[in-house]
Image 1 (cartoon, rainbow, N blue to C red):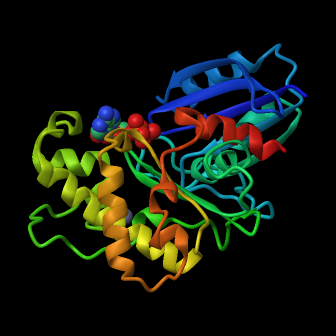
Image 2: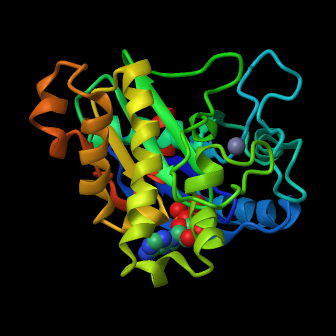
Image 3: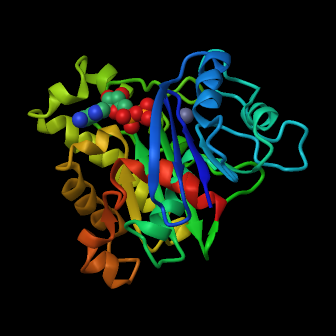
Length: 286
Ligand code: ADP
Ligand code: ZN
């Protein structure tokens, strides 16, 4: 089957043509500008490619309720021009194929569970730490939805005693995303994250926040694998710092060898590299 896949991000849209084995034959990256301009490029890419289905993982929040009049829309984003834009409605005007739709992070979690670091597991979390923080969850073989969908990047965390930064989330100030996203790191320390590599305090504080969040997710959802991706996680030295703090926070309470003895294979980078989102969009179609 020829499947179209879209990873719709706030910075860029990645579009691909692939199949149900996760092979991507062709891809394109389009900067996210206005909805009209961005969609024009997206439509042009897929035109004439004979796609039989389309899978879309999108930044959000998004309306995933099929009974809602605004199904397929991006809802309350602070990103200029995009709130209330009906992404799926617009795509359906151009392509009369069935469209599978979910959040970018749910798509990534699904992709990782079929082909990546959580292959064969019926449960995992995919956390992206980038411009924002988003978390997708698969439990008992299903992507987690609810009233809308979880927004685990915006949970409250205990503040680091040495952190004077107020937090940058436009909705909550010092929620997890407000304290630990890439832009939060850069606002706190006044430099690009990549220029802060040699300052251990930066990464100790980053791990302090991410580890709290992950410990909370483990306590709530008991995922079988925790996958961390996104730009900030290019700092691979964060992994041991996070693992160590997660174990400390859980304090031996969660009695499982994955946490007590095998944390290195429990909290891991994506198996699909930078492709979790796009390949996950293919997975949504299956
Ligand atoms: P997006 O979240 O927009 O899809 P990314 O996941 O690449 O994009 O996240 C971008 C953020 O990640 C930037 O704000 C930047 O601070 C941070 N970032 C990108 N590359 C690195 C890196 N190598 N090391 C640390 N932080 C990085
Ligand atoms: Zn927030």
